[in-house]
Length: 540
Image 1 (cartoon, one colour):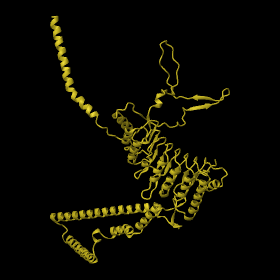
Image 2 (cartoon, helix red, strand yellow):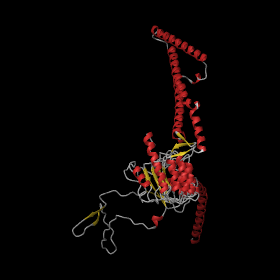
Image 3 (cartoon, one colour):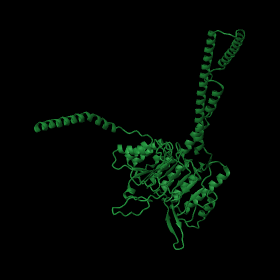
Image 4 (tube, one colour):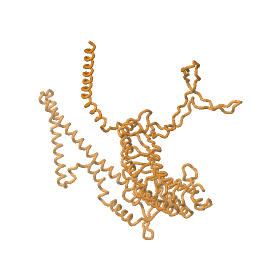
């Protein structure tokens, strides 16, 4: 009996193992299908926390950076630290804790443990050195309302930049990006400049502490750029990088019209780079703040900057471009289209524009005949209604059909008029944009002929200029004084809105003696212009 029982148990074991093998074989396709589905690319939803973590997992990153809300300074609360004085002790630091929860745990010996305040948490040192992304939210605990993104002290490679591209382009309230000391390269800077215009509300970009060997910073402020404030402090920018920025900042054909503030402090820009930036200021009329603190700019660079701010002679290329713009501006084809389109759209239809006078008279006569016939038919219908107040059902249906046809025709005519008006409005907007661009173009301003050259007024939209801690001597200070004097006299004569000239000029910590007369005159001229009533030109 015992042997038979053992045989039956062994058979059952073999059957159960075979059954499990069959189940595993049947389940393998589902598992493979799940694996294939997990390899599909992730589609971002607009929630920065979820999108960033999922994209990092998809890239199989060993360490995924944490996403945290940027800490803010604590506000004054009842549970804050207070200082109280007594007779014995001058100052005591008292910590108030609301609703303390006593420790209910008992040690093994049976003695009750002392209660400890739970006012802080300890973290290991490694937690503070791990990469993280700090954000600011417009609405608390809503990760789709991210307004600022701060990344500090860890390298961003091309794959991480692609991750940021997929996340940032869906954030509708993002307006500030701060990437401090993130080891940007030429490739990552190119990809960053490519997708920043897709962030429609992005205005502030801070890339301090990134030394890029190629110095292709000019790609950030191209034609499609929406950046209004750009900070490139301590990025090791030399004259080559400054030349690229100057070329994009202002040129004859397509100057930058978005950038308002540019900070280039703590770089290696010399006289050549300052000259290229001055050439950019000649044709730029939107930049309002330029900071060049802590560079290597000398007298030559200061002379070129002062020339761009006071007045300068046009080069041969600029005079040729000026003549082209004036010829296009004075041509009748350019003046008349907006007015002619408005007249045609309001007074006559589009089919009458190409007709002769005889055709127009014929059309007027036919229109009058139609009006007379319409009046006669209206009178007849009125008489019929008076004589026959009770009409048959067939006549009612005919009248209703006629009325519906008339209403449809009226609706079609209204739609045509709306489309014509929209086309005319778009034409008018194009004309206005062209006029505004012409007004902003400095080549169309009044010129003076001196010694065979055309001289034009310089840049007066720049309000703040910081040239502190450079290598500007007495000669450069004298040229800057001439520029300030020219701007003050010109603004007092013209009284143009939006052309105030320099209001703050910083020249401290330059190799100039404190008793320099030019420096004192600059101080006297700039002090009443300063909106904060504080002297911004401080003697060393």
